[in-house]
Image (tube, rainbow, N blue to C red; front, side):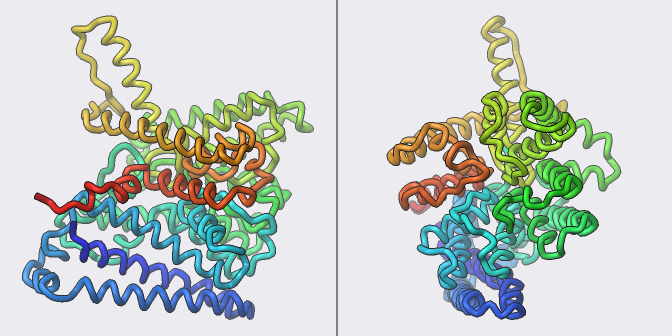
Length: 499
């Protein structure tokens, strides 16, 4: 295990987090929010000192000499797959720990575990909250709370690799992006991973800016437009209003947010193909067609199922589309209390919590691509049972899937079910009703936010015990990192020396 390389990357992550806190510091300074200003300032100082220490330790002794002698490697022997997993998992834990300090040091959220839960929920783009009076927070901390969504949406390491050249083309960036990127497989849009990371962030920034423009055109204040664009782009769902998007009684604003939620739930490869004037190839994406089919199919069913609760069919479709888009993209915004919807509609939303958005998007869940692969693998096995000598291959977008991709999907689903069952057993100690217990776990590991019953759109997670908050925080990290990096971080074999 290359400990110095891990420290080197963690040092860069902490330094970037300190820089990202500067806008929140300026807001606190401008608005004379003294407690927030002091808390953010202390956090930035701690981050900078610690990052300098880690970066300095990574450059000493034989390690630094090897770096000078070998231009193709930053860390002597370099980093491999297991270092990539460790850096990713450890990076997300560390950035959440220090990201919680402004809330804790300012005293706006009581107890460090509550601050940790809120920050993990932000960076993992879950949107689950322990706050009942969101509007009471200082503006600077409301900004930081929403901005964690935007950074976490595309990925902490993707952002790091997009702005800092940390490797010389020796495969290190691939190991890092493979550990952080959502979906059953990872590929490059451009010849190098660094250029791919930059391109992804360029698309991400452009869509965010366009959304801000649309919200401003609808009369939403500038600050509100920025933070809600952050939350939508990251498919996170933190609003600065207690009533979430229902606080904005405007079908235009709600529709804009719903449409952009759908867009950010699409695989970013689709946007790349469109920019390359290959729109026809993008629209032939099997995952995109299934994603839109599920979304609009669920919208229609729920609209008719909930029609008696609305004044018109148009209103029913409007709120149905918003909530389906919000849940399937794992954003978690709400315009109505879907806890009061008929059982069919609520169960459809639970299914969407599990399925989630597309691979390669900012959304969570198991991903539509995995659902397609599982379905096709099931069909293939059934056909093989009927005709044992028949050779069946699983294809997607006209290309045969490698066996390791299919094995990875089944391994992921096995781990997903195991983690969910274990977490549900832990949460059930508190003796809440089944809807609360089950959906609290599903919505956290799916990075959605609201569940049903007590953790519905009008509720929160403040009533859970410290143990349950830690379990649910782990679920959020496990879901965002797609299980394996988090598990491998704590596996003893990961830390053993190579033989």
